[in-house]
Length: 261
Image 1 (tube, rainbow, N blue to C red):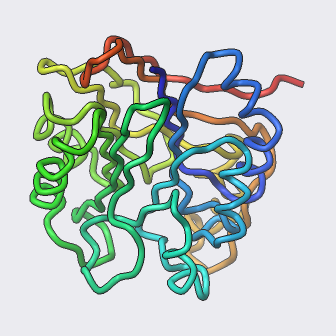
Image 2 (image 1 turned 30 degrees about the horizontal axis):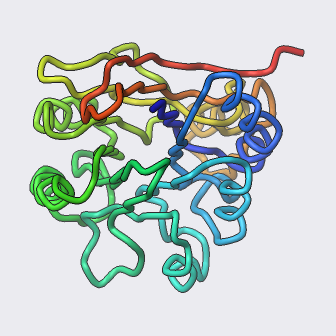
């Protein structure tokens, strides 16, 4: 079993790249299952049912979300109909949407959920560690593999989650900062871990946004729109491999794939 896990999909450039390249990448690299964070998929902030359907049609099997989950108008009325999408599990219980996914892949049940970090983050959420502990306990008897995302600003909070779930979760990965970290590895008790997968979007940018607009905000402090950038688009993430019948991975590797023109 080979899982491909992709960092935040940013706007139309990220979606178009997947539409053009993901199926062939899956075939060439013997990928069985794809997970991607989609919280920036619609215009760079949030997601809609239409963009979620487009991502699934491109070859993604499961979509996780983050702190921009409700940025697009009416998505709170759409999310319950999307069977392959889960919102952060530590949002208030009154929020719509699934707090986890269990998806069958060739007879193997893959349990997936995300939690939001609390350090330097806006949404008021429950403790990500206690939430993750509870859901992992609930998935242990219902899923063959358990994949956990922590969508967080602070690297320390992400790394702490990796150690906290080491040996219990199959994979723990971080998203949100759109810049891949070089710490991807298998931890001492067997869990695959990376602090941030990066993004599926335009690398000639500031976190997926046009460079000049972002520079202006830093230089003069004046508010201005920062449209999604367009150049050097690719996908970043990791591939995790599992031997038959094993919950913990046998191999892990970071990926940064883009088309060279």
